[in-house]
Length: 290
Length: 319
Image (cartoon, rainbow over all chains, first blue to last red):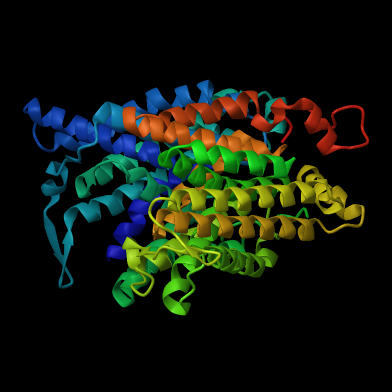
C-alpha cells in the first residue's frame, strides 16, 4: 500500500517534468526547485489561512491556490525570459541552463523563506486514519492517490480529447510542421511550461504536510523524478504513471527486504532501463544515429 | 612552456602562506577532474557523473593505507588513478552507445548508484567517510610545517604533467578526431573511423583524470566521504568545465582557481547567495561565451582546432 502512495506522489511530481520534456524537449533540472517553491508557498498559504481564522478544510484550497499562483508567476517568466533565449541550441546546453536555474532558485528560496524548516501539518490531520483490510492507512495517503489519479486523468483527457490538447500533441510530434499549419508555437511552449510548473508546485504543495519544508528538498526530488521519467519514457504520460509505479514498487521492496539498498535500488532500475531500453518503456524505439 | 610554468609555480609557492597553498592545491586537484570533463566535452559527451571517478580515486587512495599499508602519496595517487581508469574502461563500451542527455543521465545514475553504495556500506565508512593517515612523499615524512607546501608541489607537478599530456593528446590525430566526433559523429563513421571508439577514449581519459583528482583531494583533505559521488559534486565540476571551455588547458585550471576563490570569499560573506551568483554567471557564460574562457585567446583557438585552415572552422554559438 505504501508503494502505491509513494508512487502517486512520484507521479504528480514527475508528470510536469515529462510534459515539459515532451513539448519543449528540455530536461528541466530546476523542476525540483519549483517543487520546493511550491512546498514553501503552500506552507506560507496555509499558515496565512490559519491566521485568518478560516476553517481547516480551506487549507487544501489554499494549497491549490498557492500552486496556481506559483505557476502563473514563475512559469511564463522563466520560459519567456530565460529559456526562450536558448532554443535551437543543443539539448545538453539547455540541460546546463536548467542546472544553472536550479542553482539560482535554490538560493532564491533561501533568501525569500529563510533556512529554518516550516511545518504545515493541518491538512494531513484533516484526514485521519482509515482501517482497511486490517492495515492502518493514513487518510492523507489515500487523498494523494486520488489526487494523482485526477491529475493523470485530466491531463490525458485534455491532451487527447480537446482541440487545444491535440494541438499540443501536434507540437510535440513536429514543431516545424505545426508552425507551418498556423499554430502559435510560442504560446504552446509558454502554456506547456506553465502547466509543468503548476504540476511541480502542486506536488510540492501537497507534499508539504508530510514533511518538514526546508532547504535541500529539491536535490532529493530531482533525481527521483529523473528516474521515473526516464523509466517511463520522456514525454509520455502513461510512461510517467508506469515509471512511478515501478519506482514505488522497487523502493518499497527494497525498504521491506533489504533496507541498505533503498537509496540506490532506484538508480539501479534507472540504469538498467537506460541500458536496455533507453527511450523508456513507453516510447517507440527510434532509429539510432551513431 | 609547461616546465616553465611548473618551476614558476613551485617557486611562487615558497612565498605563499599555507592557506593559499592549500587553496591552490585544492583548485588544481579539482582542475584535474574538470580537465577530464573538458576532454570528454571536447569529444562529444556531457557527463554529470565525474563524481563517480572522483570518489573512486579518493576512496582507493584512502583504503590502500589501511588495507595494504601503502604510505607513499605518489603511489596512492597512481593507484587511485588506475582504479578509476579501470572502472571507466569497464563502463565505456556501455556508455558510448548513447549521446546527449541519455549519456549524461546514465553517468549521473551510475554516479548516484556509487553514492548509495558508499553511503550504506559500513565497511567503507558509511556516510561519515574515512579519514586518511598522513602520507609520506617519496620516502620523506611530512612534518606539519611543510606538509602543505610538499602537497602543493606534488599537485603542481601532477597537474602540469597531466595538462601537458592532455594538450599532446588534443593536438594528436586521435584528439582532433574527437573534435570531429563532437561536431558530427555520423560523418566520422562514414569517413571510416570509429566515433564510439573515440568517445570511449575520451571517456577513459576523463575517468583517469577524475581518479587522479580524487586521490590528490583525499590526501590534501585527509578525509573522504560518499558525497564525492553525489551529482551535486559533479554539477560543480561541470560548471567549471562550462566556464573554462574546451579550447585551452590552462583555462581549465584558471577557471577552477577562480571558482575556489569565489567560493571561499562568498562562504565568508554571502553564504546564502553564492549559488545564485554561480547560476547567473553560468547563464551569462553560456549565452555570451559558449566556448568558455579558453576562447578568449582567439589565435590559439584557431591554431589548435584546425592547423591548416586560415579561417576559424567553428562559428561562435555552435554546439
